[in-house]
Image (tube, rainbow, N blue to C red):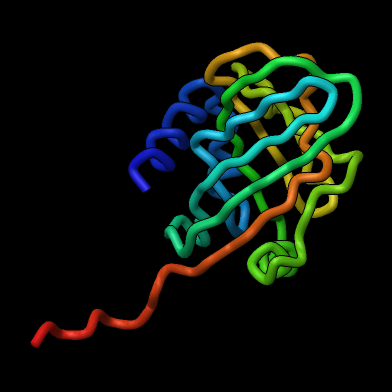
Length: 156
């Protein structure tokens, strides 16, 4: 949770215009660290937190397998904003993956100014390290597990 909140702050600092997405989206999935690597065939994986109305509601995972001209490795942060309750519900039920045409916007000052939701989502990434020739998010699949809402059993 701490890393997710720190990543939100770092992204807002890098591009203050992102605040309109953080405050205007019905929810967002924050992945503080995604690892990605490829030599022809590639893969990526990350764990994160789903926020609804500004409150953390569960854990989420992202995985991706890609084939094509790609080489290298990198770590990055990713945030997926959900425009509607329907898109958010699809994400939570596991009926959500990115189509090949969805792309992410690299965070830098002013990058969010002209970004609009596409198919109910807006995706931003911030590179943390490494170098990779390939920057798509198409084919990503997600998992979601709500935080427990049951009170802890008292110890005997």
